[in-house]
Image (cartoon, rainbow, N blue to C red; front, side, top):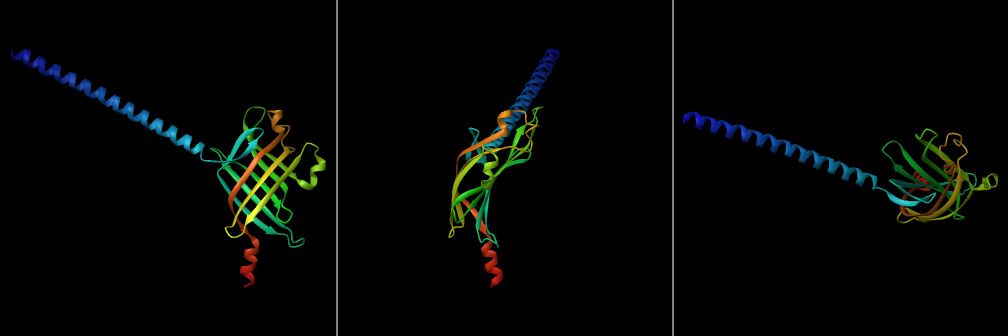
Length: 205
């Protein structure tokens, strides 16, 4: 009788240990799944942490940060507004920069630095650069746009449409369609800017 009781106690002990191990494993698995789901949500949130700016060859492109600088040419007295949009990536970044003649309210230059695949499929930075006074050199290039400055709030708004060719890395490009980029539906507002005239006023005081 005592042996039977001892065997029963031992069996109960081993069974409870097994259940504890299973519960511990289930708990660890559940915690792992929760961590994975949390990481996926964080990644998705990070990936979506951009403000839509335009379409590049028909695909949406957004920026992470944006700022502007208004400067005055000492020789011509022309005021230029340079607006820079940067998109942070897991590795590196992309950017779109616009230059406007503030007085004529026209787009005068564009510069885009975009990641595109090479012939081996590896992404590398491509430079698309075009000035309005050199459009005749590239029959496929075009640009137009306007800008406005809110001098009280120190923010700027504007539009732009342009087609620019890559003349620097065209031999490395994996896709012929990336040789030419068309940026459309570009609208922005509320982008803060600094004005170099303010610095001159400070020094002249």
